[in-house]
Image 1 (cartoon, one colour):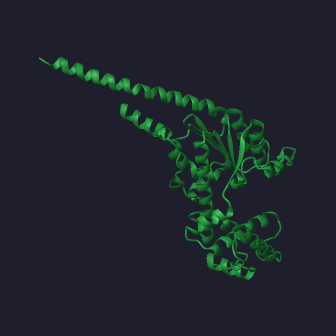
Image 2 (cartoon, one colour):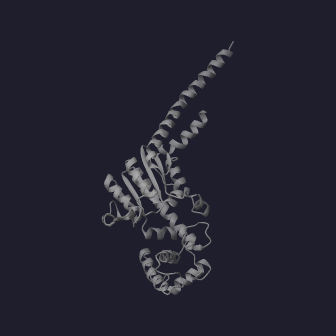
Image 3 (cartoon, rainbow, N blue to C red):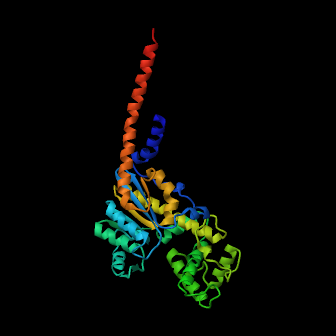
Length: 344
């Protein structure tokens, strides 16, 4: 009994006893088809406790309906926890706290019949404003993504090529093109190549035309850019069939490593932190967060109950831990009594 309590105490309390929170990027789980299959069908959340502070992570299923579970979890997070700092998916961290451009853009968003076109970032930012929290973007700059991905062995051509490729599924969804063979595709690709080079601060020579980009695509994925193209090719799957999946996964991992770093930074500043990112990020980051902070005190889809659950679990564990010295002392006394009874 005592040994099991000691192990439990170590698992839950040792991370919280650290002087600082240290990021654990080596614990990030790669995004694979198996992990994707294990992901909940809808949004979910996890709550971690560290030295009296809370990290509330809403794993959003990107939504635009105000009655969605994602919107409800965000509202519950503000209602159930004190939040000092909010880290939101989308904007760059380098834009700073409460970026004027972000707040102005959110203020211009309108709800029409329960529909908010720009999604969960709207209730995230508005909730922070209403509850006095500070909002930061959670994304690294593209130049930082560039440097970190290049350090993993990819090339600048891979980055420029993939930054452009990932727009193709969006164009198809938005009906700007029907597919690679659409007559409008070439012009869109060349315009996106220019934007990608600008964002990555790349020279003009990597993939300077549609023809050079199409050659890169065929060399990378082993097939021409034609009707065989599938939307899956842009996904960040570590075990995906295409080389572009590996490039995407590397970019995604850089984003998650950066997110871990800024979570640690704000927890070390004694902030209570709310993170609102897509649910796949939470799936990949849970092992790393548990390594940094100890196991979550709550996981589920009702943050209204999370505050009570976390307080109750910590109180119960504290009571168990406080029993350890008493149990040990009782065993020592019992041993001494037994030895005395055996003495002549």
